[in-house]
Length: 142
Image 1 (cartoon, rainbow, N blue to C red):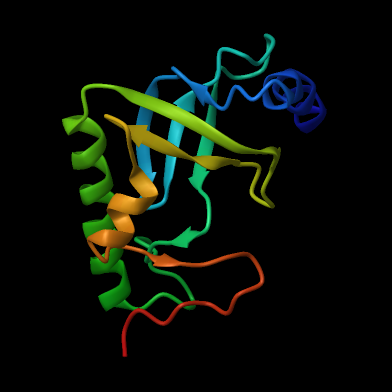
Image 2 (image 1 turned 90 degrees about the vertical axis):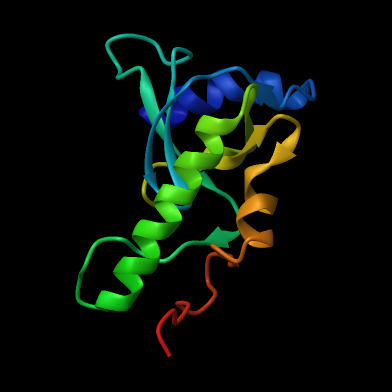
């Protein structure tokens, strides 16, 4: 139901070419995922959503079955870098790139910080790597 409501709310804007939104960044989840204000959702739904930066992969910051300690360190570094860049920016806009949610229920898009793509900043600084669903898991610790 939540996905359907989101699509109904976003599709008119996407069709009209309005891709940039002035939603507030609430918190950094990890190097490639943030939480944004989602006041476009009707109540009683939560007024916040996760946004995954599309087409990149950051190292994981939580240890798990397939996450090594060295990847966790890189993941924490990536999350701190993302937080720093977002906090340094004067003007932050949210770019919704697809009117759908990923398999974890996150919006797919980017953050435009003072006119520059966060995705590009992260790639340029070698914090993340290009990645698309279906690609093999990136090995961060060789």
